Length: 181
Image (tube, rainbow, N blue to C red):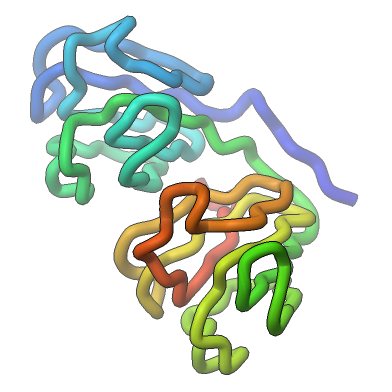
């Protein structure tokens, strides 16, 4: 049996680096930070896990943050300031994802229930272009060993990473978002 806890999570955003300037606190998704702050250059996660994005509406470069302090958005790999955030609900239970070599669930298919540090080595797949997340929340990474740019996946069908704006990226590893947040 799987459960999802939506009550976990608190993050505080600051206009300036090193937690300076005006702040905005939230425990939920925020599609556009400009309604609260003129810019956002640092954040502090008090509890839970979040994805932060350098564009509004959960677009652009993504970065996974958990309990801790993030004093400079540029160290997180953001090209611009933080513009939106998504709270990641706590998932308890099994994790399942099907990855596909081609768009629209074509080509090779592999079902995974655990982290995979190299899709190429484990499954002999040179590309992963679509997936179906059945259980849990996952992060896909552009490089093996959970490195490089990432993409957050909630339960659902993802028919085309290219159409989602990830056309130039190849996903090479994936990790479950566990309750260790």
